Length: 269
Image 1 (cartoon, helix red, strand yellow):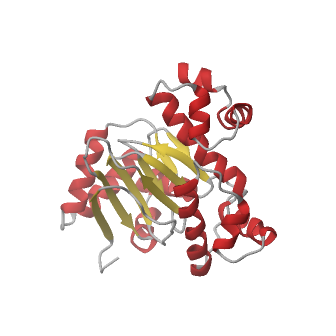
Image 2 (cartoon, one colour):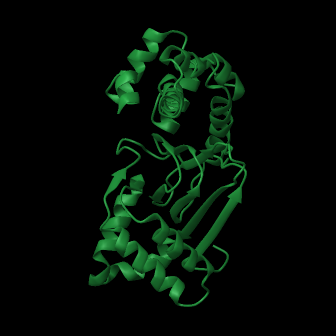
Image 3 (cartoon, helix red, strand yellow):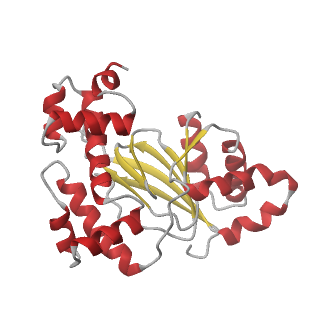
């Protein structure tokens, strides 16, 4: 934490490409400009401008962004703070709401209703201020967020597997899948990357991510298909093929399972 109780970051780059990682600090991330896929534990979602997420300590996560078509950089604000810093405040009656919020953040939470401009302004003030206002500003922000509607991200079934070796091997596989999910990749190719048998690889992947290899691959493909259904007028059969599915019937079956509706209904809504 570089000797500070609160660490603030302003990210401005061509694309978000952080590795799957975790750390002992709480983390509040606000996406000013950016779109792509966010993974928190065993949850995967598309994200876009205005995405606001609070993560608890040691919860694996990554944001993988797309290059923006308007040549504008991806920008985000990140605030990290340690348990050691926040713990003394949580014994106060006045911070009960913050305490409850931080417990919920153990599985990651995405806030649903808030004023984006206000959030950006307040986070910038916390990041740029070097006085006591940095601390009071964060406490006030967390207190205000505790009353906002939210969605829990990682499931309660997800268990963190802490190991630098596991993290390194898993990143090889995840980066490979992110780059190639729209082609016909398979389990055998992925298992060779980290020198495991197919059986050992399946156990390793499920233990690390909380999902099977094929389920995670389908999540990537369906998220891409959802973006195409919303942003383009391409035929559904074309979208299915470009998302990595070999036939339309299987695509429709997986889409219905993941989104609880047919692609045609999703596009109409």
